[in-house]
Figure 1 (spheres, each protein chain N blue to C red):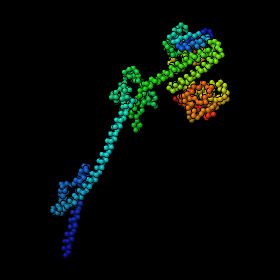
Figure 2 (figure 1 turned 30 degrees about the horizontal axis):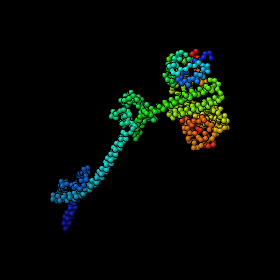
Figure 3 (figure 1 turned 135 degrees about the horizontal axis):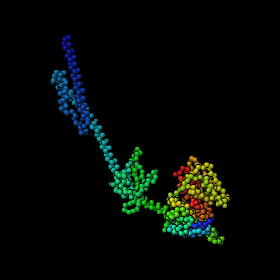
Figure 4 (figure 1 turned 45 degrees about the vertical axis):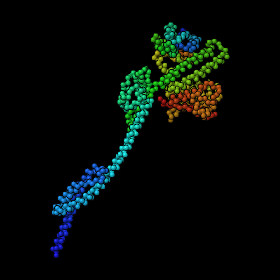
Length: 128
Length: 484
């Protein structure tokens, strides 16, 4: 790894983001957390994350609205949607805003790490 | 002497000739008269009635006219006015007497006949009136029934114009009967009031009509169940629609599906947080833990898995029952699915020394199914089979193509304890568990088979079990090749 990968986790469930952030940190990632969409947009500006994990159900500004706003300021930032369960309807709505993948909260964090690696690899290729 | 005889002979002959002539003349006259009366009589028939039955038909003037005619005919032959008159009178009298007799008889017959006809007609008329009155009463009853039913009823003709509209329909649609009769139902309803008119499926003839009520901003949703009215020749002459207000029902459905979605989220989120935290501790990335600590954390983790599989099953089942489960169908290979499921059970089967045999027919056709859901069904069946099969048993997964029924039949057979006959019918019920459940089993939710049944039926297939106590059990399901 040439450079530490910066992850931004956007989820109001701190009981979930804490163990997840801890796990990713032990694996050598740099992790910041925002607990709503508005805070996330600010962190994207200041922290310049490489990848965003975005929850859909949030107060203040939900995931859907956040994704729209992110796409206004950054068209290529990889966004992975975090979801407690699969809702095909919601994911369909997300399609036009180019999401890089879905991470189910029940899955192993290992799967999350694999997802990050593959998304960033593809992303790098596209950038070149 | 001879001369005298000759004279006598002449007299006799002339008398005979005279008689002949008279007879001939009278014959002609009678014929004429008969013809004359025949016409009179036929005119009389048309106006005959009961009161004329005993009336004398021939009048004095007719007598006189017959006598005059006879005299005129006879006199030139007899050359005696007096004789002619006497003969005429006599003939006339005889003739009249006979004629009157006949006419009276005819009149009587006719009168009787007409009396019968009139009586019959009167009877028929009475029956018709009775029927008419009954029909009117029935119509009133029907109208009263239609008026008082709570559901709206609209009848339209073949052009869609309203023929009938009951008060409930008036209220539901917010229209007046008088202004709708003879017009199309949707005519004049303002566009903002009629939000949508969606025909759901052609065979059900059910429509949902969304209306905005004028007094407030709430929407009203009506369901129209319609049936085509055909005459005896099968020609469409109109349509009858029953309207019911399903606004509340729709609201409840929406609440139920929202509830499922929110419960899915609310129940899973805390479970995931607990599971992740426990996993982190167990992974020792947070620091070393003692053996006892590890043992209890493992108990916590195992029961979390159990709880979350129960929640997943409950949510799946409520989704299935609410018809909210959407299948992601794609052409799939049953062989691949069987192999995948068998592989996931390898370790568990090995620990119980159970063999899993696969008998998959070569060249099975691809089938259009949701592979994840069929994997879920098969996982359930194989999992149950392993659970109920003692050490060293065998499980056979079989897949066959049933050409006649155009379906694929998959079965999972075991050499376990089997299922009692009385349980066979109930094992697909929710939360039903047989008494022979192994005590070591903590993973059963009692929902697995109920979910399997719903999932297979959603695919258009069937699922059932065959078993005899002590001889193992066999679970069979079919998947149709041509499903919608």
